[in-house]
Amino acid sequence: MDWIGTPDAWLSRLVLQRGLALVYLLAFLSAVREFRVLAGEHGLTPAPAFLRRVPSRRAPSLFRLHYSDRLFDAVAWLGAVLSAALAAGLGDLVPLWATLPLWAVPWLLYLSIVNIGQVWYAFGWESLLLEAGFLAIFLGNDDIAPPTFTLYLFVWLVFRVELGAGLIKWRGDPCWRKLTCLNYHHETQPMPGPLSWFFHRLPRPLHRVEAAANHVAQLIVPFGLFLPRPLATWAAAVVIVTQLWLVASGNFAWLNWLTMLLAFAAVDGALLARLVPPLPSPPDGRPNAPAWFTALVLAATALVAVLSHRPVRNLLSSRQQMNRIYNPLHLVNSYGAFGSVTRERHEIVLEGTSAPEPNGGAEWREYEFHGKPGDVRRLPRQFAPFHLRLDWLMWFAALMPRSPRSWVPPLVDRLLTGDRRVLRLLRANPFPDAPPAWIRARVYRYRFTTRHERHTTGAWWHRDPVADYLPPRSLGPTPPA
Image (cartoon, rainbow, N blue to C red; front, top):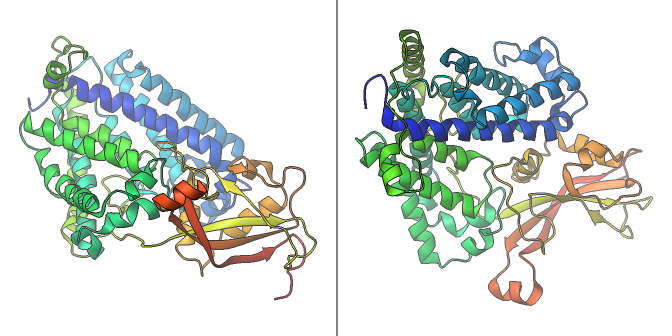
């Protein structure tokens, strides 16, 4: 690598920019679909109330100037249109100076959404997208060779993602060190995918191999990303293959896809073009960046270096924290995943009845979600890289069945009124003609069926009732205990 520009990294920049633009597009479309219902003016946790309660220094956002659902739609759709244009190559059609605002605008728009999204946007991959999106501002375009320092900033980011995930596992749940966590994980992960049942039913020795391979991929391989090429390229390939394995076995929104994109920062485009003939040859030599752009890249590098001291301390700490955000701009964060693995799967099931009283004679019918398990005969679907925030929060709510989340009663109240916006986030409405008189929330223990059960019943899940999460609730007086 040249200290200023790396011509052979043309493929890395292409994949990073087009891929990030597509992830941005998904993120903005997800916001269009869910935000107004979850956190809009009349959402389950309204953003206007949050903006009044939280000072701007803790949550900077364009919506500090004004929030309305109509303005939010305009912001989200603007972000989606601009992301689609960048994915189509707009950044390479404009002068170098124009690429900076083209990448800065979607970062600013999405930051404004995340910072008022509250619990619905408290996922590690939201901060990961913002950090990667900020770095993308300094990637330049086809007018110059890919800037070396920016590429190393991407490598530093994927290094922290992978090593952070590996260390939190090794230091956390003992089952990771015993290589037994994957006896449970495929069944208890937040949102299983269509192949999760098959992964769960792999022989126990293969689960141990999975866990051991994960440790190698996340604790050792990340250091190879900083080695000279082609060694760094092979380290990136291991990261990508590992993430594809996670894509096949579950639904983690855009986390795995974004991690694969970041790993491309270490890939030698010329080598890959030789190994994969259908890929185009590297373009003709590009000049290094002008002085003003190089100065901006160096300034961004210095900023990341200064902000890295806390993530590094977190990585070295025996009390490592997962997904820690150190500043309201979501720059240079700490990442990690599954420091602990649940042994049993609990699911909250919302049930409604049209009976005048919720007594033993009432017929209860279930609401169905798109991603979270419900109907035991329904094969889990693949939704990643799209993000279903309500489904994910239902999984988190089930982890503490004795402490109902504050947004659950408002959700139930919207269903009692037949709120069409809320119902559009669900897969099936069991009361299409009129809303129910009562709704309750119950906790069930779910487990994957055995091969014999699957063959005889056709069900993917078996479930048993555990407890009540929320007693029967209506728009009228609460029934006596």
